[in-house]
Image (cartoon, rainbow, N blue to C red; front, side, top):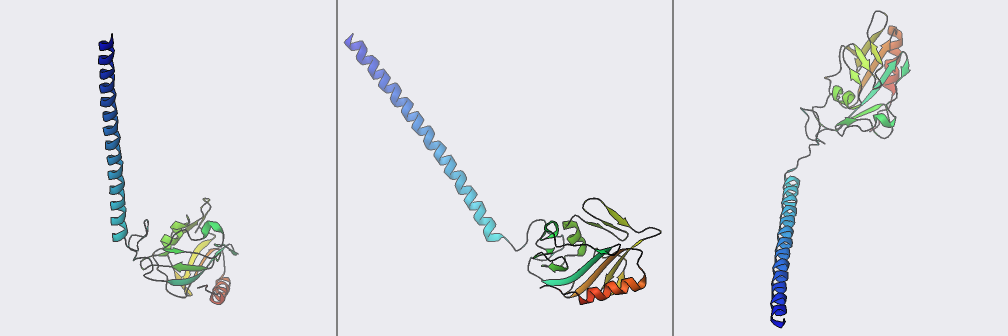
Length: 198
């Protein structure tokens, strides 16, 4: 019996050693794999950091780099004589390219060349074309037989403002309703006296 027990113990030791060695090898391979993956991720992140530009994702198609321009324009939107307020949180800094900021709803801030008003309104989920002004909740104000949508840039009438890129100190008026020419002139005077926050 002594010999058989010794032989069994030797076999157990060899089995234990073999299992332990296999487990150690497996753990080493897993550690090497994980460290290699971490190394690849760090290398890729470093590459991205070193090659990144000033462009933010999701910007306008033809926009310059962020910071390539910094322009401000005053804006007033009147719907049936009531002024629309862009100072609420729903309309503040929705895009780094062009936006309203600092709880001010009357000054547009543009931070890159090639950014037009259509991009601003799209970022605010407001639909805009030559006939309609459409709020995020779906309410539409469209030119018809009784009422009309009108655009003014620096006091001059414009048929459409979507493709317009603001310049420093521009003044933009959007009206919808049945205003007389005198009422529109009054809106334009109010807009001229409106402070542009820089």
